[in-house]
Figure 1 (tube, helix red, strand yellow):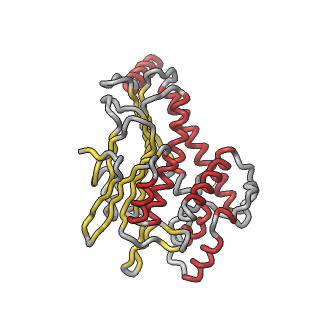
Figure 2 (tube, rainbow, N blue to C red):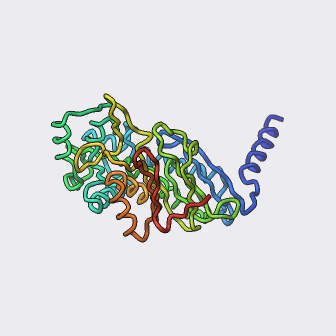
Figure 3 (cartoon, one colour):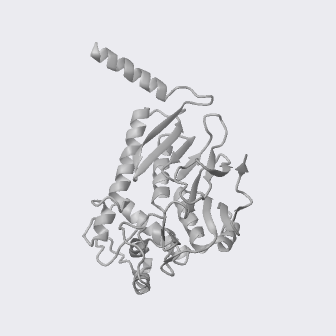
Length: 332
């Protein structure tokens, strides 16, 4: 009887997971990853894999990312590298390093994974320090730069890396590639950042909300500034801002966006930057870049890159204003 009851419950659960939606057979898979939760929505049409197998595959990939690239997992390859231990870099570790170096070169050092000591010193890395002296900032900034990292990644002696500016976007891309390999065409991967392709269960392109960048707005979707709708094609969508990770000392706000070129947290009127790019890793890196360089330079950057779209929210004399690139599809 107990065995029969379990089978009935399992059948009911699977029926719920693959229940028919208005268009296609959509399911939602969720779990824990990178200190938070993830949600993946996908259409099972044309896919042979079972929902539980897909979930196990996603979880395995996220575990690999955690044990490779997380600075919070003390046993990860990255943490061991940052402690100066000898490691055997896996392909993912090598791939992330090469990408980080490309972003560093492209942005003139504004996006710099080697600035881990600066992030730590200001309390936004893998430590709890804050308010370093000017002397400390200058000393640490002088040691940053991806060109100073030894090319032999088996030893991290004298080098420290922090991939927080791109790791969540990269994770979305990895999961998306796995789903593509199964034949999935319609998907939305949410691991703090977003990758989407195709259409939602209603048969329409995916629509995402852009949060209002109000200090302390830590609940995604609670306060909305605008909504973006995809064109139905593959893309990454990432918002970077200084309204969730910051602290106040002596009446002054210190935000988590550090300019590695100066060593100090940025101080300008750009509140958040949402970037749409071909990959979530690119969107992640370029959203960070926009937050480093500020409003006017971010406008120029987004306007001259045909493959990118952007939505900037900024403060002007106490008013919250917005700027959107021509192809950023805002909807009601």
